[in-house]
Image 1 (cartoon, one colour):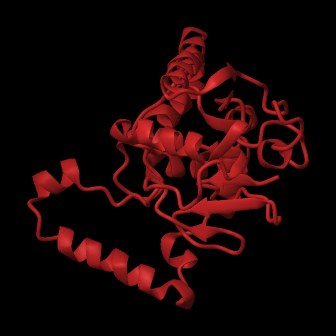
Image 2 (tube, helix red, strand yellow; image 1 turned 135 degrees about the horizontal axis):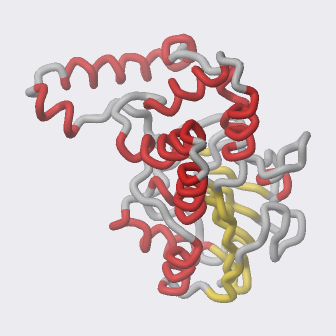
Length: 264
């Protein structure tokens, strides 16, 4: 059995039967441009897993991405995709607003919009989450942890860009400085509207709900689409390590997401 994890980030299984792809290399991860033709033969994998990447794909490229997924999956194999749930976010904002719980409503608004519009690394969401970590509103902290899971936990260990950079990625620092230098020659009005210094993979280009993405899968010839819970799958517990938090056994990235599976 062979499995592929696309855009794995730091959430991957380091075993011989798993191939992990991301835009940057790491131990157990192959570096690859994820919007190009996947570097595998047809029908290579029994399952393809992809978490919190589809919302970063431009709408003009989503069909080609799904066609690549179905190409490399074996007949009868499974595609599992995890992504933010736009319907949930809309409902949650309205519920909080109508209950006059405006701080929670504000958080949901930031969570929904910031990654679509941010122009700097981490955006306003990072600043907001750090501020919440440093205040005494325990109810808000627990709410945010429920919504986004380990992404909120990780803010405790958040480092600045320059703290993360070391000699091994010195050339990445030079690249960033070069981009800042070149952009300094652009007219400020144009730069403020059109230039982003957010990291690769930070910005969302679209948000989906279950029905709209089910339609997208069927348009690309996937079948038997279902919406399992975070700890269920066509393939039993294959994805537990990826989707289930290791200590509290809740969804690793909180309840603001949905899980969708389909077969080739």
